[in-house]
Amino acid sequence: MKSKLLLAAACALSVVPLAFAEGHHWSYQGHSSAAHWAELDESFKTCKLGKHQSPIDVDTRAVERSADAKPIGFAYAAGPGEVVNNGHTIQVNLPAAGSVTLDGVEYKLLQFHFHTPSEEKIDGKSYPLVAHLVHKNAEGQLAVVAVLFKAGKENAALKPVFDHLPAKEGETRKLDVAVDAADLLPANRAYYAFTGSLTTPPCSEEVRWQVLKTPVELSRSQLAAFRKLYRMNARPVQPLNGRKVLAVNSN
Ligand SMILES: [Zn+2]
Image 1 (cartoon, rainbow, N blue to C red):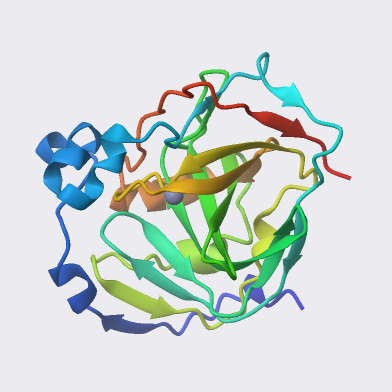
Image 2: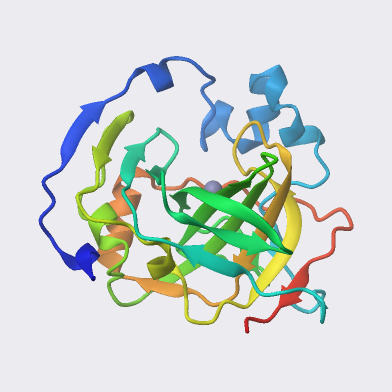
């Protein structure tokens, strides 16, 4: 059922200030920008000291092609969603959205959120937007699938989220249509894989990254709607420090 195409968006607005009352005022500008994150709080020191940080610039001439690496096993499912403006991005929380399987290990999809421009670069080039789909396995380890967006046609899958972005920090809105993260994916699921970190404080490492090679499209007005709230929320690329980047084909 293509319920996401429905425009009826009777949105339930609420404000959850508690989640934002605490914490540290990291940002993407000025004295609290990415270059200063490690200075803002002791628990953010990995942002500076970590050797496996994200995002990275993928040099496609240097990637290793692996015959052993398997395609990502996508098993996303349509379910309820809640859109949150968390003060750093727009995030869609998903309590029952399915999972991915990486090397035989299942990671449940928890949420996706956006950065503009894309944090990851491919051969030095960034894209206007990226979606990070964040997953966790039974051991609590994280895996992120990144979907790059280029300017083009309106993206129908983004529509229920982008048509009514919660404008205020701390504002949440329940989606009245089911969200299926599979609708965000390109047809070709070839990807670049590497070990990295959260791209926001505390910059924790041991995160599995999968950047899909093929971008999908969004319209200029969709991009503008996001940039009206977040003009720039991308951490600069980080040194590879000898990490391997694998290029894996889709099946
Ligand atoms: Zn992210």
